[in-house]
Image (cartoon, rainbow, N blue to C red; front, side, top):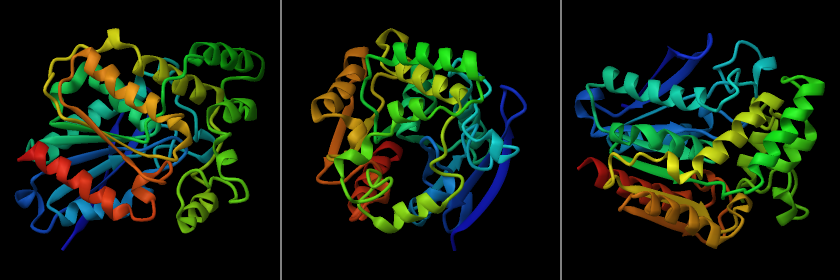
Amino acid sequence: MIESENFKIRSDYGEVELFCKAYLPEGGVKEAKGIVEIVHGMCEHIARYDGFMRYLAENGYIAAAHDLRGHGESVKSDEELGYFGDKTGEAVVNDVFKVTKALKERYQNLPVVLLGHSMGAMIVRVFLQEHDKEIEGLIVSGSPSKNALAGAGIALDKTIGLFRGERHRSKMMAALATGNGDKNFPGEGKNAWLTRDKSVVDAYNADKKCGFVFTCNGFENLLRLMKNTYDKKRYRVQNPNLPIFFISGSNDPIMISEDKWVAAQNDLRDAGYQNVSGRLYHEMRHEVLNELKKEEVYADVKAFIDGCTD
């Protein structure tokens, strides 16, 4: 029988209590082959990964995740949604590191495979820069491609925040960050860019803890993550043989182009990682784990994780 447990971990940055959830395989920790730690994307929460986490538990893994600061149940009130507190982009990455260490202590030091989606895909690559020896594998899902205007975006965001306050929710910044995805799918409705599965999109649109507008502080974190992710000088590369697997939908707007998606993988190869691979899923959109025929993605991810933990 698959069991789940909820717990909280206090962040080292501010008074943030990170809400965590884990699914354990039948037989519990003693029967687990490893831990899969999931880092979700912007403007969502870990409950959206329940189906995938149950699948991992059914296949012998402890599936664990936490609501990022400013998201889900890791906020004191809905007014805190999209507000990170920290301005550097460091706190949200350190939170992942702290959760990774806590999961190892909680679950008998089992090997960890880290999976980051969308904004989480940037968070896990910044995590990689200092902590690649903590994990046995990395999955980069729905990776935002490099944006050379991230620096200009930070300047614009800081200017808006200077006049309106760091908790101001700027529709302009939202449009620049993710607001143009639906133009690729005219007539399909709000947030159709996420997945072709309309039931998933409808649930997302109806969820008050999804799709909110970041504060200026949140956008500053997002843009700093973008800059840091693609700064090859930041990668220490202590574990050059670490298996890294990129997955994305071929119709994901934030990928921008297949060439840019491949370039993101080459950036890690250039930094010194020798075991980088990827798969692009035909006609899938941004959330390949929530797509039609997602079972194919699940199977590929499981095969990768099996190879990391054997």
